[in-house]
Structures are given as structure tokens and as C-alpha cells.
Amino acid sequence: MDTPNLRPLRLGEILDGAVGLYRHNFWLLVGIIALAEIPLLLVQVALPLMHPQTAGDSSSLFWWITTAASMVMRWFFVDGLGAAVLSYAIAQRYLRQPVSILDAYRRLGSSWLSMAVFLLFFPAILVGVLIWGFVPCAGWVSSAGIFIFLSMAVMPLIPVVIMVEGQPILKAMLRAWDLTRRRFFWILGFNMVMAVFSWILAVGPSLVAGLLATALLGASLGNLQQTTESFYGLISSVSGTLFNMLFLPIQVGAWTLIYYDLRVRTEAFDLALLVVDEAEQANRLVRLPPLEKWFSGNDIARLILTSLLVGVAFALIYVVPMILFFLLALMALPR
Image (cartoon, rainbow, N blue to C red; front, top):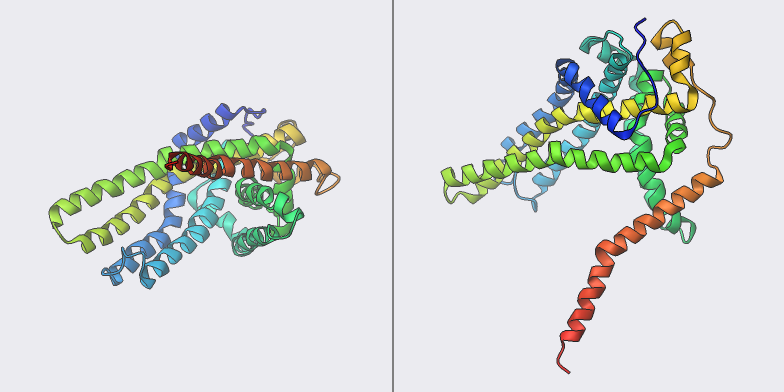
């Protein structure tokens, strides 16, 4: 086996490695996610054309149905199944193993039940965490931290664990939690960096494309404002999907590299891979048992601290400016 040079990675090395894997396996990764994007594109294009008069009207029921359908399709087929297949293909290429589009989707066939349960019930867990936030004292000081860490750190790693290790859903969730809590704040910081990357490489260009298309349509259609708004919604949705298709392999690649970085740091996966004959055996077998407690005192303290930091950030962004504006308004009143 051609053994990769596994070692602990810094943030820049993870991003550089994800871009490198994307560049060297462009057609493989784009082909995988393009297949997952097909159902979403069909919904985004077909539904607005069925009722173009209200397709761009956010006050209409049809607009809400179209938007909800697009969100559900994106969650299941792109962010869910497509990202899972991508993670397996990237893991194979990172370990220098051959893989094709068909091989990657065939691997999904053996893990489809775990992925389906994850896609259906993990959002319900997040809703439960939000409800927990209404519980006095305990919920107030912990709900935000739990929600942020589950959604920003644990959730992206669950499909990787399911696809690479072949874990059932419950064990995959516990495994993802156990790995990510070992670098709690680092992973949260990394997710913020990826959010900035998303705006630069996907969201920003999509907005620009939508605005340019609207300007061109407005110039050609004249006063047909309703038609222009309908086409803007269609073009904005489709361009967002296409730019996301180009960016998602980089995002999934970064999370896959984080998965291996955590295993190298905490399980000596790099050394074990030198002993085990096949990378597949190492992925499935070479892993440490979970830490002694699923929730240690340190974990609870970190979650509460995260909640407090969120509260401070919310106050700085919203509450403090409102108070200053109110005070300035009082000072401006005639005496």
C-alpha cells in the first residue's frame, strides 16, 4: 500500500490539503456532487415555472412551498447524501486509494439506513436543544453552546464517521462527539473560518450573479417588474446551487482532513496505518475507546462558556448599539 504522510496538521495545512485534493480530483468530486444536485435543480427550476406569477412573491403560499421544498431537497440530497459520498471519496484519495464515482455511491448503499436516520432525526435533536433553552437557569446558560457545538462541530463529522468507519447512526453520533470535544474551541474557530470561505467562494459570487442577471433582465424587460422578480428568484437559486456545487468538495474535504487529524493526534492513526495491511482495516479497527465519561465537567464548562460568549456577542452587536442610540436620542431632546 502507498502509505500517505499522515501527521498533525495546522489550520493552513488543512485548508491547503483540501484545496489540493479538490484540484487533483476535480472531475471525480464535481461528478459526485453533480449527481446529488440533480434533484435539487429540478425542484428549483420546475416549481417556479409552474406558477411564475407568484414565484418571486415572498408573501405568497407558493413561494413558501417552493422555498421549503428547495431547503428539504438540499438538506437530504446535497448536504446529506452528496456530502457523505464526497467524504468517502476524499478519504480514499487522501489515503491514496483508488475510488470512482460508482464506488463512492456503492459505499453509500451499505450505509443508507444510518444516513437516512441521521438526516431525519438530527434536526429534531437540534430543535430539542432549542426547546431546552426555555428551561430556567440550566437551559438558559447551556442551550446556545450545545446548539452551536452540535450544529457546527459534531454534525459535519457524523457523515464522515458513517461512511469511513461504517458505524451505525447512534455510535457514529457518539463517535463524532467524542472526537470533536477533544479540540473543542479549535474546531469552532475552524468552522468560522469555513463560513468566511463560503461567503467568498459561494454565497458572494451567487449574489453577484443574481444581481447582474436582474439588472440585465430589468433593462430588457422594461417595466415588467413581476417577471423580473420571478426570474431573479430562479436565477439566484440556480446560481447558488451551482456555486455550492463547486465549493462543497472543498468544505467536505476540510472536514475529512480534520477527522484524520483528530485521529492522528488522539489515536496514533498514522502509526497504526503503517502496521495494518489495508487502509480500510485501519479506518474500521484502529480507534480508541471513548473517553471515560460522555459529559465531563470540562465539557459542561466549555458548553456554558460558549453560551456566555454567544450572549456577549449578541449584546455587543444588537443590545449595546440600541442602548447607545436611545441615550443619544435622550440627549438630543430639548431641555
